[in-house]
Image (cartoon, rainbow over all chains, first blue to last red; front, side, top):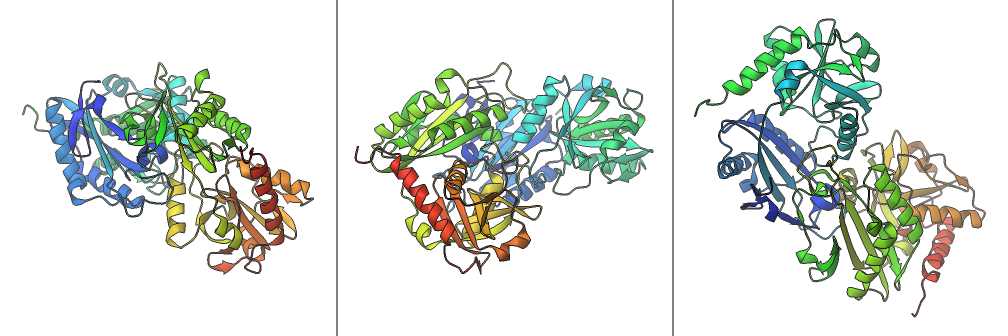
Length: 291
Length: 291
């Protein structure tokens, strides 16, 4: 994808020419936040939620963004970029990153403040249809992350190490365990079905408030599926009837085996299937198909 | 300092021309490690310790570095850079950073592996003599960091937020508290004197194994000062007789007030002073002064 176009600090330019100074605080500190959005036929899915979360992440690490870079403006830039990359047809993803900017390396914020660095890229996207149909494999991994997982920052080393471990085990996702409880996945949120209720970790500083997580909860209550925010304990795992992961590019994906042991009867379960179906309807119906 | 020279991936070039691709994993993930070394008259202080720690950090996050970028080779490059920047006289610091390299953004490691990105910069350095003489102020802050603080990675957001908080309080350092115990500072290790013994957090995954920390411990045992690795509890703080922070650019710096309350009698204490003196001798005597 070396020839596609990206956006960097006011310019649309070839990816190969998109360069940042070594003193960008993203490069030396991971001092930034990001969002990934799903686009169907040029229409952004749940953009308001992503924009709100981006604002919350920026506020969380105290990056002040000028009005011309408000998340809604970044969406407009992203739309322009999708057009420039001929990705308004079919499916795509948008990656938006904001760092605190470029300054001589020192931990405390630059004073006076410098302009934030804004980077946006887009990619053609294909849903993981086969894994969504058949279900996938996951592994557990210790949750090594910091205490503010509710901010979507680019300090992603623990997620990387867990994802790499999963890949080496032939699994799609690492499900993270903190204090003997499932928090979420390295890149997704995690839901289980236990005694007929949908169980997922409560929204606190130990998980990212996932957009798809939130949509799934809304859809589940529409289906009269009970939601219980008691975290799934490690000791609950053998009793799980169903297990799935959710995310912007993952949708609802059944997990049919965890750490090599089948979940429930080892097939995608009925609640997972129902949620998967209505989530897909929600994603695709919000797009002006055939436009 | 826009006109000085830095090293990036095989080249020495002006800092203003040192640019990395937006897809560098340092920029999108904070996926890298670093070291800061102290240089006196062209001589690297405790280089072997820094090199060993860099190897340990690289192994910890599983970055494989080719032989031409072994830490010892990076020291040679740094020496060349110091020469190019006319920083072989007097004092300087060297910053060395290695990231996993450039690849299309995906959490798991690039496969096949890509060449790591190597960035080295140098700066003229002045010790903080006045703060070392008079002592300084510190504040406590919750330790929000991940579970592998023993790797010196560029995932530094929690350190940044704590450092910024300290700066806003007029303090030099934020002293981090995890589970009601002092772990270390946002940029330094922390030592206290309690009942005549030197107390500091044990080396485990909750602190960085500081080079100066290790040198100070060696020097302390030479002075027959007892060292106790029982962490200092929050409730111990009012009883502290002395408190100091240590680091590569901090040396031994007395903390005379914490959270606005005097430590001991509010002046640098005798054990701190003795350690400060012999650390300075150690740093400066290892340099071929007048060369």
